[in-house]
Image (cartoon, rainbow over all chains, first blue to last red):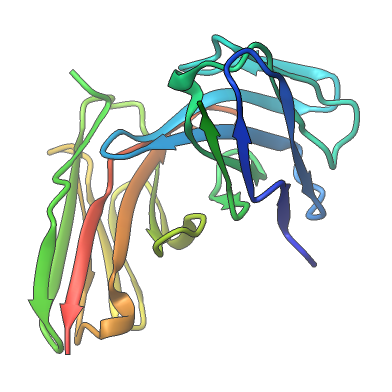
Length: 111
Length: 111
């Protein structure tokens, strides 16, 4: 099993550009999550999904959108990128009440 | 008040030392408690998972949960340089609920 995979690994965006961060898991987990990690701030939940077709906002959803058309995929869309979105983004999946399995992360810089 | 509080360190210990990492929390509904290890520029990986109160041991690692004090600990015995990483505590109320993370404690084990 590959676990949770994320693409791209690195990306530099200009202010106002858009992009999609891809996330795929092969563990048949129903629950999937997007976190951002900023230095000294810990992991903040952006969006999560409890199954295909169902998504909900987390703690810091502004400026982001998600969709969940399949169990495996949970892409995160950034519209009109801003410098405040410079961060490391982690996708994770879970059985629900148990541990999270994280992907390797995407390092995004918005300049 | 944050849901989860964790001393960010940094913590520096000599090889072979016993390390104690701690988190406090405010939400008495938390039932699931986890410790993640994150190496530099990598995604977090699950180290220990505990349900409700008590102790759990896995090799050199012991996790303790004291729900009455809203306090969790991770002990690392015979610490090794390979244990040098950031350790994040996390907790959740149950199935389908969000995970709440501490900000992480940076640990360096000096050979």
